[in-house]
Length: 145
Image 1: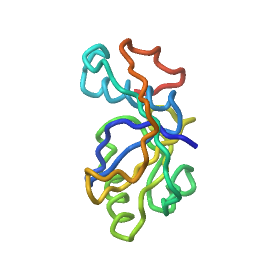
Image 2: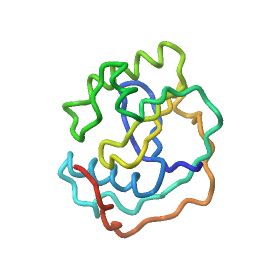
Image 3: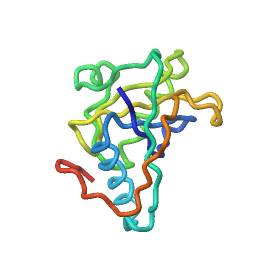
Image 4: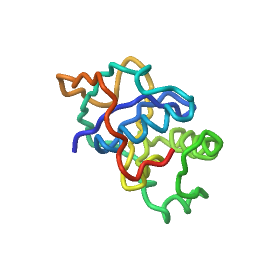
């Protein structure tokens, strides 16, 4: 599976990837909506695909798995982040390389958060060339902001 990247912040050095392009754009639009930014202010953008080697990641992509660590299904909005950040930090301390989760912006999509030790050394391999996006894409159906 190839992954596409976007900027994210878990509270520890991390690298976020979306499982597909529709999820990437849903997360991008959610990010813009939270900050009140028009899409044109964040363009042009390079859209990169990445290969991720087999890593030990916690699969929190289903409601029952989230429940095991005391979390509800993700919802858009920064107010919900602290409890998810706490679980992510705990997983990192326990030696996990990242976590797989349902997208808050597009529930049918998944995101992969990889914990990074060195922000210069990514735990994924970029697959060149990037696609340069100069016009805002249509927001995916089912997007929640």
